[in-house]
Structure formats: structure tokens, C-alpha cells
Length: 247
Image (cartoon, rainbow, N blue to C red; front, side, top):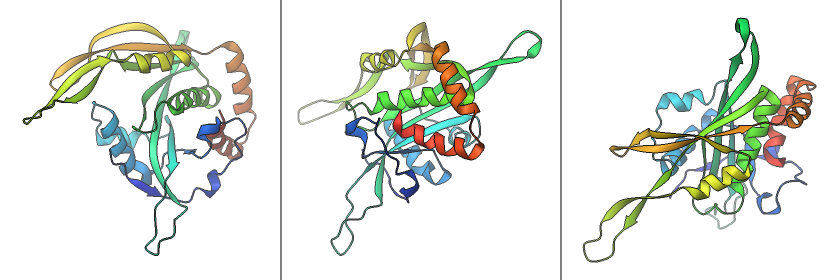
């Protein structure tokens, strides 16, 4: 899988990461910008069988979304033979949105969050990056959007392509268990709350899904809401980026 290499100034994202897992300390995490959209589209196309419209990507930039991009440093050589220090590769993404839950009389009571997409590029899996992104996006939803419940959908069986051997090799689509993803979400506090037959449609057929839900605890809502409410807008902006890397 070839993902666009993004060269960007990451100096402002160099945080002290004492609480970050050791194996992720060379990664950089930040919000989505418009300049990232081509690489984000390429990563989504490589990771997900569902193809998203241009409108979906535009909406990721609005105020009702929170996004975390994960970049890994790569060695990119200059023409003179020396290595550059600003070459990074987009290897993971988490996107989420939220909406208000209204009570009696239309009063806004709290927010529900929804993780729209979450994925990690092949070659960067099984190192805790996906779990890190899930926990980070949930915490950001709680802290800055007063979210009490977070939902997401996950395929019951994940599509994969199998290359048959022989002189006339063919590629055959297979359906394999999606238990690894389900176990990861369970580790992050999500539970299966609904089985949804034919929820997705791609590849000329319907696919079943689970609705997963995480109910945020009173203690974490109280603690994180105090952090978010007590900050100025500038501090919130800085804290948002910091949380992306230290959760």
C-alpha cells in the first residue's frame, strides 16, 4: 500500500511525552488540515471497503468533528545523499463527530459521540497504535464536547482478498472474522449493543455490522470536563494537540 508522503513542519507538535507508550514516542499526532485531505483520502481508500464521498472529507474540517492523524517518520534521501528530517508518512487516523441529546422541552442535556472511521496502515498494526487512537479520541470527545456515550459501527466479518496459486492466479474476495477489531474496541470499554443485518452495502452485496457503545463513567466525565471548562480557548487549542499524544 502506497500512502502519500506529507512533508510538513512538525516543530510545534514536539511535545514531552512521558506517558506515551515507548514504542509510539517517535510518532506525531495532530488534527486534520485541508492540506492533509489527499493523503487522508488515499489512506481511507486503502483501509476501508466503504468508499466515502468528497462531502464526507469536507465535513471532517467543520466544527462538529474531531480528528487525530498519526504520522510516522520516514527516511527520505535528498539528492545529495543526506537524509531529510521533515518527511513523515500518514499511517493512522481517527475521525469522530457528536450531536446533542435533548431532554424534556427541547433542553440540551448532553452530547453523544460517534467514531466515524478509525484505521491503521498495514505495517503499523499490532503495536498498540489503534488502541491509542481509540482511547485518545474518546477522551477528547469527553473533555471538549461533554460526550457521555460514544458509538461506532464495525463489520461482523472483514473483507479480504485472497490470491490463488497456479499459472492462472486469480484474486478472490473472502470474508474473515473481524474479532481482532472487536477485541480492540472491547479493551477500550466498548460493548456490542446491537446486531445490524445488511447495515453496509459495498462490493455488490450487503454486509452485517455490530453497533458498539461505550458509556463514559461519571468520574472521567467530571475530571475531564473540569479540565476542558477551565481553560481559555488558546489553552484548549494547545491542550487538544497535547492530549492527542499523551493519552
